[in-house]
Image (tube, rainbow, N blue to C red; front, side, top):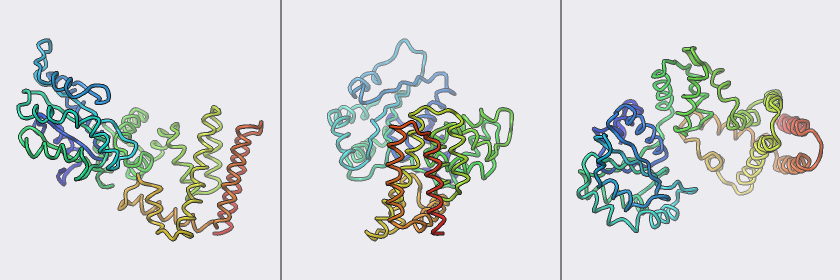
Length: 371
């Protein structure tokens, strides 16, 4: 488990030659972040060779045979094999057990036998992106392997850290690049990427290049750096629809159309609005007609936002306010209007910007009439 110090420092320690064993199984919400630290470890050690394997392409016998074979043509003193279990669309018990049967079960005896006497200076790092628990076959297999071969195998869960730890991590990472970041800028960056730390790491790299020689990163820098991405368009648009104003929504829309988007990009932009309204309509039904707790409905719609974060509380409050702003009938009518606009954008010569802006005016008129 990670110790209660710097989250980044502890992750680096987990992926160091002091901690690595011949076999290492990393799983959890942020397990894929391990690969960045593996690559960093290799980059700072010239005598280390890195090889990458995907289990849907290369089976275990081939991997274990290569691990056990001395590479006479390499000057590397150590070899790291980074092995990926395929990512699952849904990490539930049924999908996990199916993946076990396909990628591990036929070779479990060979894998166990290898770790009884593993090759020297060869480190197998196996990654699974997603939560696992006792009773699921992948977890049980590697847990049993670690119990029987404590000297040669271990498993580690890489969880999503607390909000304060991520904000500290953002500051640490940017400080290593010679940059400081304002608190509001770090919070905005986290809101944009949500708790996807691999994406967050990529965004920090891009942000540090975007500001050039500037030493301190502001919230405006974060917004400008991310403005060209569709993920930011969705984020900003949702923020405007949820807790902003008509002026904000129109400004985002006009900025989007100023860049002369392709037809597919226009439909994606319109789909962002549609998804939000349809989700609101469905949530209204679940809360008022089916009597589901609003917190449960919100968590189902926003699984990427962790309960306990300040972002969770703020978004839940905004979501609750917005639900109260509309009646079920009004939301039904708005969804019907969206369907009509969708048809017009696809099949007529009407200006899509005009159609979308007219809908936004209508949306905020209805919302404000109930405020």
